[in-house]
Length: 190
Image 1: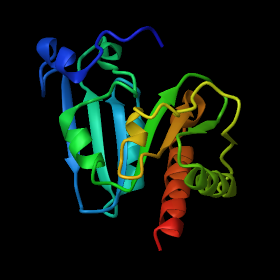
Image 2: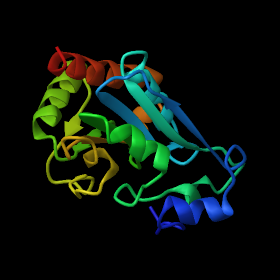
Image 3: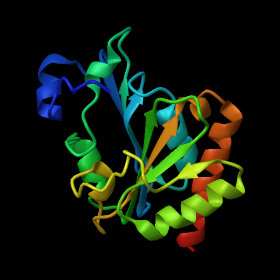
Image 4: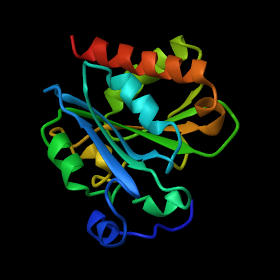
């Protein structure tokens, strides 16, 4: 992805308008688990849908969504710089934070990253059980920066899913990813 236009949410909101260029969706159900799509809507297509499908009514959900007719990529703020206040307020109260992202590639693959190695292993198992191919090592989507939005919850460790275009274009696979992540969360949360 090209270099970001904005280095912070404050920079973005000076030139972009809420409910015209972007929107923010928040559902706080009081869960210790929050699912986020910081590059949702038309920024990274279908990531908001996946986040909402994982969260359903069980988990908190936050989506920052591009809604412009074009050039939504300019709304992308790198995960370790993403500092939209509503997102930070929600995740600072969350024990588990999972961020949903999109990456290029026609290969059907989910790249797992983040600092919560136990949850990464559990998600890997559940996704593989659903027939989803996973990579958790030796890729560029590591999500290990302590400032990465997924690592800014109570435990300071979370999980980042980077989902290829090959999976995001297949609604059946999107459902399987959502089911797999939900199964992993329900397993660790019981």
